[in-house]
Length: 207
Ligand code: ATP
Ligand code: MG
Image (cartoon, rainbow, N blue to C red):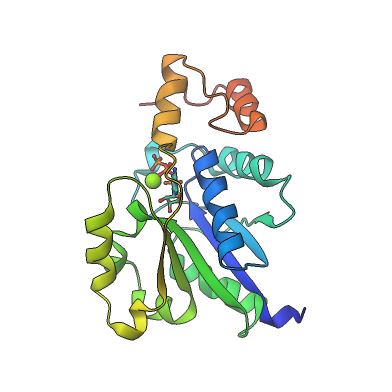
């Protein structure tokens, strides 16, 4: 296939830690939207999260690599890791545009909870021009998602795709709490990630 006409999914997240909710969502969207690859982008410093409470990007990046390694369509980018300051999606997608060329189509994959404040994202109009959004349904956010999507006019709205997925009630917050309490996280994260968390003692004393 012509390299320039690729369809690329971008899965941004804190991935603290990455879990099977992220992986199943990315794989399901990849197949449904006929994507050539999905690039996972661990956020350096997410604009909406308290930096003090987040695990170091090095650990989050390593876990993301381990979790995605066995899928030939999954890749991990250190683009936000290498950039100082808060991680804004517009800056990241612009960097990918420069890397892959104008003909590449980008699909930013998010869960529905992450998209409820989309109208406030940095340079959102430009963002919707250079990439489309795929919003995977997650429990309990439907009305807020509709409101966020309806904020945009027809042309922009067409670039935000709602995508109904099997709703896996898994979150990194829940995983961190389980580790702290000494509960099992088996099968909620890949085995390699589980082993890494235990070996490095991550989340044992998390707030
Ligand atoms: P936290 O609880 O720390 O916020 P999280 O589980 O929401 O973590 P993030 O790294 O914040 O994970 O999310 C990255 C992206 O993955 C977001 O777009 C989020 O909406 C989406 N996501 C997270 N969990 C799921 C899930 N179980 N199913 C579908 N999408 C998910
Ligand atoms: Mg989240």
